[in-house]
Image (cartoon, rainbow, N blue to C red):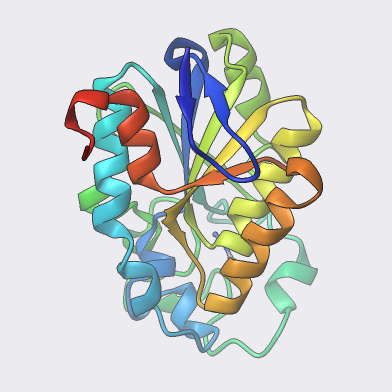
Amino acid sequence: MIHIDAQPYGFTFLPASTALIVIDMQRDFIEPGGFGESLGNDVSRLAAIVPTVAALLDTCRRHGIAVIHTREAHRPDLSDCPPAKRGRGDAALRIGDTGPMGRILVAGEPGNDILPAVAPLPGEIVIDKPGKGAFYATALGEILRLKGITHLLFAGVTTEVCVQTTMREANDRGYDCLLVEDATASYFPAFKAAAIDMIVAQGGIVGWSAPLAALTAALEPSKANP
Ligand code: C5J
């Protein structure tokens, strides 16, 4: 058993029955010209976590923790995009419109790709999801069940939207979930802080939170600072 110092108290897991879920580390959210910027956001806040997510991926891969990536992605005919989602807000470019990185949030377009620095390795599962939560209208639940996964680590963007929604879906399905807090980001720092507070409040009503260093110290105690 591995034990991590976490909020609101220690998180205990077995690597063989744990998966890391990396949410939506896509050019559409993190690079200029994509969906995130079209909504008026400063995307540099999200780009800042890329090295931490890359280090987290490396640590999990070396310790036999399964890695699953998600992408927020719609079919080219937008048949899986509710009109209410496409019409929401005052975006310069809406889902399906053509921007500098191809059609916004459409599967197969350059902007829909995961950033090369945190790209899936051959054999890692990639879930395309039409919603904010990764369980809705995807095979994620069945995939985790077949792999015998009971514990989930979370990273990616954005903390209070797709990460928190998926973590809540997972919590309701009986998974013990830990957010790797410096491997997630929001366009709004106050929303990231509030999401973490909500997750760990009331004895971990949604789950646990810890920095990457706590996970690394637990998995690699010989490398931890005295
Ligand atoms: C958003 C996401 N924020 N991946 N998507 O629309 O959080």
